[in-house]
Amino acid sequence: MRNPTDKLRLSVGFILARRFTLCAFANFVDVLRLAADEGDRSRPIRCGWRVLSTTMEPITASSGITVQPEERLGDPSRFDYIVVVGGLIDEVANLHPDYVHFLHAAAEAGVPLVGVCTGAFILHRIGLMDGYRCCVSWFHHDDFLEQFDGLKPVSDQIFVVDRDRLTCSGGASSAHLAAFLVERHVGRAEATKSLHIMIIDEAERAETPQPGIPLDLRSGDPLVKKALILMQQNIDTPISIDEVARRLGVNRRQIERRFQARIGTSPTHAFKMIRLEHAEYLLRHSNRSITAIAIESGFCDSSHFIRAFRERSGQTPAAFRGLTGEATLPETG
Image (tube, rainbow, N blue to C red):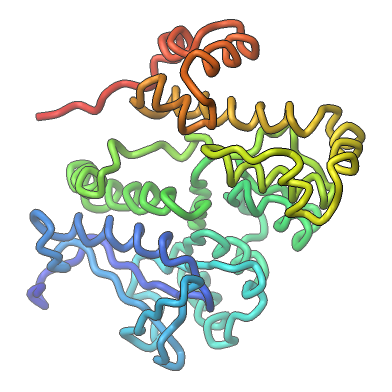
């Protein structure tokens, strides 16, 4: 274990909301863990992290797995950052008053606050994001607008750093935000090592776009919105529009009329756009083969994918990748 006389370079306290997202929390912690010591010996030498609580009762994630808190809230200024990990939308309003008081005390003491997943919702709800830019997952973009009228969240990049407020969309982006903090306080080598051990090629910039529904297809119509999300969730194994209608409890004709009226295209064409946008993202940000990208984007073979991609962009996937110049293999050695 760490010698008590050693000075941590990065110390993080975690507030876990009820039914928090385990993946987002685990990714963030593992970057800290791997950066804290040589190899993966897990000694908290350079980085420290504690799960905080007001009751010390186990906290249940949205997956049903529980996490045991390690310390009571206490003085927030003993940490470099306080990270709020959110989860299910229904729990955003249910933060215990002691946590609210603690987070306000942290803000008053100048401790930077981090919102992970719907942690950004929680910070906004308790009045700690006024005047700040905020990153929200594309999946929860419309939910955010419904809860916070007049605010425009950032849903086209993986995390946002705005002075002493840092927010990310959750999932894998929490690893990249944690790596950003490690690089800032511990060093680039430690941040890179953490990501490589986690089989993440390299740290992504905050501006890296979130893979999600194309902005041209966004709609406030609840039926269209649900259909688009259902399509997004089935990119690699596309379901028929008849199946989309069945799952939403309507008929195909209703969906077709609503899509045409709200976003000016058919659901079939919208689904194809989503899959091609996903393929474009992979061409920019991964080294997967054209065939692998075709399969992951729901095309039956690479020939079909190449034809569809050329129709949309006027060039082949290989030519597009060559022009962007972003999908390069990570350096070794």
